[in-house]
Amino acid sequence: MTVTALLFASYAEALGSDRVELACAESATVGEVVAQLRALPGGAALPPSPLVAVNLTYARADQRVASGDEIAIIPPVAGG
Amino acid sequence: MSIRTAIVRRPIDVGALLAEVQDRGTGATLAFLGRVREVNDGRAVTGIEYSAYGDMAERELAAIAGECAREFGIAHLVVEHRLGTLGLGEASIAIVVAHGHRAAAYEASRFVIEEVKRRLPVWKREGYVDGSSEWVNANGTPEQQQTQTAAREHQT
Image (tube, rainbow over all chains, first blue to last red):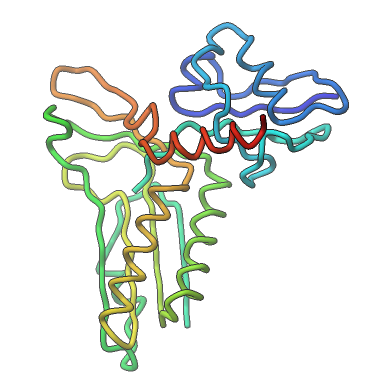
């Protein structure tokens, strides 16, 4: 199945893109998607357990992902 | 009661926000502005570029305001967070609270800004007078790192 990973700020710069389509296993978890991203060129800039949101809601690393999910890797926030 | 939150790409008009919460039933109206500071960590700043995960930022900001309303019983609350390039002194966030009494108004305002700092998916790239620029808080605050560590330990 395919999921869409969204990257922001320093993470987008490190990977050279703000959006990556990933093919992953049917039973893939958030943590496994992160591991796939970390294996890409520049992906080492991502920490092993970054904050992640699935379809706009913060998610845990063991949460399963589904085809078409929007998986956002959230760098440390700096709003306000 | 009225609550409005927005992620905007234009200057924040605090006067308009104050007018929005005008209510003879409220004895305390408080406006907090977060503004671009000219020196950060000893470096002279020229401006800040704010970016966000737009859809989620709108949703989180609305959630924070809803929690604030429930917790502090505020009468009116308006929060705007601005994105884009901001110059020195420009407001990146405005929190306007109207409440019957001042104590709760101060607490409510503080609650909103602390939650924004903790969880709103917004990032800033600070520009300096020497022409360089850097992501602010790229490695996370000690508290944010702790949260990540706790999440990781939970998995193993």
